[in-house]
Image (tube, rainbow, N blue to C red; front, side):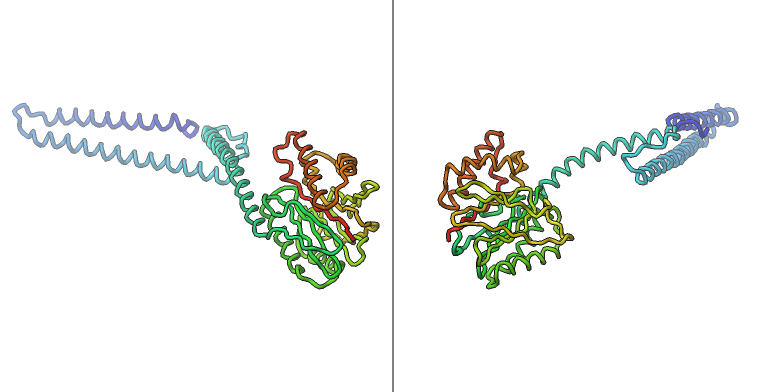
Length: 366
């Protein structure tokens, strides 16, 4: 009987029980008619009461059997629920279990797994939208970029506000003998990434009204960054002091710094790695030969990814274009770069090519 399936066991038991009840009722009725027949009509009440008692007894027996049957089914579902809770929904049931109960468990687990996968897909989209919304909210806590006048330099930047979830953090700080600048961002948006940029803003803001030299501030900011566990940060930290022809910098990006002059374009190489590592020791690099009228241009790595270009290909696109244009200010240079990038974006069928564009343009005037 133990090897009989549940689908056969339950109907068999119900049928057997009903047959036994019918047989019992039949035998008792025959016994009653045989021993208590009274053609004269005597003791009719007692005979009818016997039928009532038998009906009541059969009803109680049926209720008792149904109660235990439902208890059996309830225990079976409890066991199935317990089995499912202790087994990964994506795993297969043991192949050796070929019983009907094992087959039922597999069917239930498959249905739950498919439902979970369907819901997880929707939840992933909702979670991604939620993260973008929170990232934008964090970025809005950063004040808009304000560029103060710095003697000997003409500076422009795009954009001046952090409008999107993955906007880069950009700042220029006026110092005692020059300025300190930073361009920091991530390749992908996220709440953690926006929070990191907010922490960076807190560090930079501590030197907003400083009277210290540029190079000292660079060292202090770099030391503070080592105390944060910044992951995958694209960072360019730079400054110019009293010697306006020398640039001190850390540059952890694929996109190099470009120096435009009347002679052409020169590339100021980065610090080696393509992103900042808090556990690594970093030494500042120095670039000299920045003459009056030269331009220094920083661009975000997200631009390379968006356009599918290398830094060398970007340089090839701009070298003749900018030399023929001969801009007279950092603003003209910035607008020329943005116009060229927008044209390149349309050629590649990009919907909004300037959305992922972050540019610093610095021009030495004295």
